[in-house]
Length: 253
Image (cartoon, rainbow, N blue to C red; front, side, top):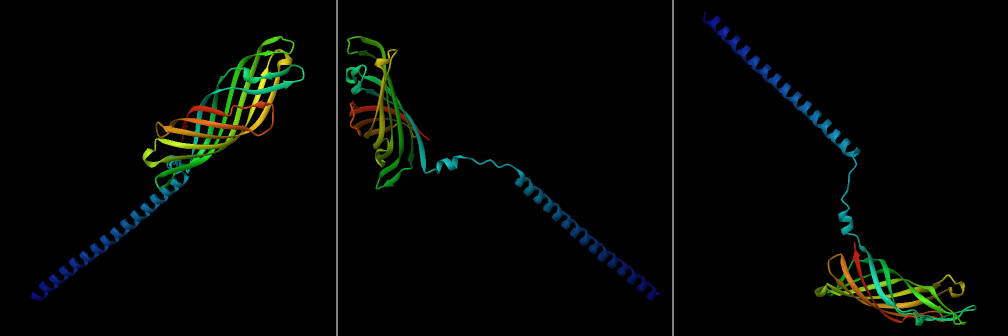
């Protein structure tokens, strides 16, 4: 009787142990399969995201490039009072004295590029290139050698110049700068009229050096004044106003 009871107990324990081991192995296999499946899913998702990013158009913010750009563009408007000078001689009409015409308002346009400022012992230095163009038109009277006065004549004057420019400002007075701009340019006097005898066109080249003060109102906007010293390069009958003041305003970006 005892032997039969012990045998039954042993069989029950053996079956229980085998069931537990089998359940543990099955659970381990299930967890491993689940982990592998999750890894595959993550891999597919990562690959899909990478492929999607590769095929997408990525837009970049241009602001960092503009901020780090080593130069700035400048554009501005200028104004001056201009006095034509010199004489023009034609075979048919004789000599026209340009200085007899009064002063006229001459607007202009300025375009250029300036480098970023270098700080040298609290002196902020920048340099660049600048181009200027100005145009004036005024009604004049042309007197012919015969004494006939032609009152429909119009004198058009243009100035075109270009050259380097240097700007200096102190770090403690950053709102004002001293500028120096040597330039090479051309002046053109053209007179138009319904009378062919009153027509002419003369051109000459000149050297100039401009000294100015630039007053910064904001970081991008300033007003300035310049004193120009001009001298004709060619020996010609026409002349050019040597000393002249000019006012202007400009923006930079």
